[in-house]
Image (cartoon, rainbow, N blue to C red; front, top):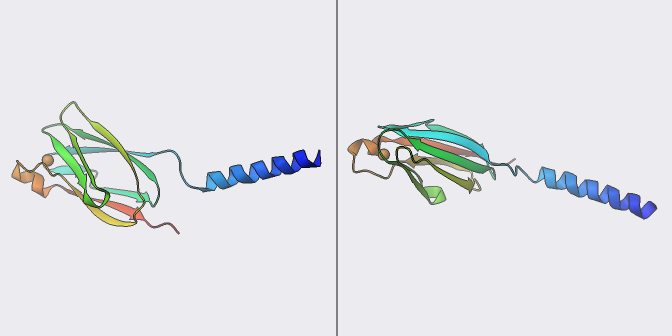
Length: 118
Ligand SMILES: [Cu+2]
């Protein structure tokens, strides 16, 4: 009986520890790219968050490119793209559209802010 109680306590401690290990559920963001801006222009997350981004465009094809995370995702009208990444690097990182056939796409800027873990 005592062993069963000890086992139960150990199990609860393990469950609590697992819950402290950080978010398991992805933080979703909906981003709309259009001539010539991102909405929102700023995304803030905590380090180690699993970030899920759904990228939409309403006019022409655009991309969301985040060099620091080696991400370049393209969306075209009616064809949004969803992607996930672990925000494991703290800092402020620009995102931009790398489909620069249209000059205006060079003006498209946003920033990803990854707040460091305390
Ligand atoms: Cu673009």
